[in-house]
Amino acid sequence: MRILMIADSYPHEEKPYLTPFHHEHAKVLSRIGEVRVLTLIRGKKFGFRRYRWEGIEVEAFEMPYRAGMGFVFFPLALFLHFIQSFRGLAGFGPDVIILQMALPHGIAYLPFAGKKKFILVEHSSSAHRRNVFLERVVAAASSGRYTVSTFYRNLLERRLGVRFHGVIPNPITGSDIECGTRTGRVAFVGRLDENKAPHLFVEAAKFLPEKRFVMMGEDPHTEYSRGILEDLPPGVEYMGAMSREQVQNILCGSDLLVSTSQFETFGVAIAEALALGKPVVWTDSGGPRDFLNERNSVLVKERTGRAVAEAIEEAYRKLESGYFDPQEIREGILRYAGVDAVEKRYREALGRLLEEGN
Image: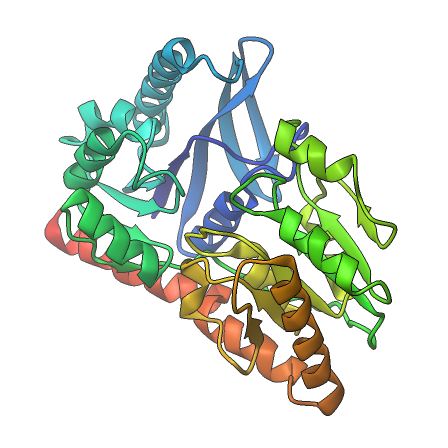
């Protein structure tokens, strides 16, 4: 089986940390058939790039880009995705098309949908609030509609008025890393923006001076992120954007992960911490409800730095008492979102598409 996966972004040499979950989906699909990924790279010039990322064949158009000028770059992205789709259909001859998220590439693919049906896997956090009309058009045209969590499926069905067929979680790979004993360090992983709310993590650190706090994630260089990074307390270290392997190593050397997000369609960083046997302190953000519970996490009672600190203290008491079992935590997330579990869901989705005639 030949599988053409189309995504608007993908990890590459300059930004290996960019949407790594797209790559995890491609790796799972490569267990089912031959995969080729089509994507865009936003940089400073026009160009074309063909490369392999951990064994996955990728073709990418490069385009210049400046934030805040969507009226220029959105049409350009549509044009390049249209060309990509045409080339992919003609040159690769896929049996199945899978779109990771709907926009903008889903609009560009619509002219070809009559020739080759497609599956949509939606995990964009903006799909329910931005360009809703276009999102609805792509979703309605797809022959299989899936999201990455039950929470997001329900939300999109209400917002778009389109029924989704099921949930395909972001794949989580088991790790052979042997994590050591407690270190007194807690970790945060996420972009330094208002949705991820790292200011709550920093505020919690002020109440727990005996702990070490590490933050990993891209700095978008906004007024919000500047306000955080320019006034870090002594016990907080910012380590910048890091590769998946670097994040895993730091999580392995931490006692737990803290997630202060307001909204998550899935919660990849949370799931990857669980795959290392690490419990999670979290503010309810939606998507992680599918796999977080009292045996692997502590839910923060309110969105304040003090409440986050209190939840961290509770998590440490449970760690010290042996309440959190690393092996149980690890096995639980892999049963739900491990590679084998996600492959099974993809095979069911692809089987349904092919039975209907593609």
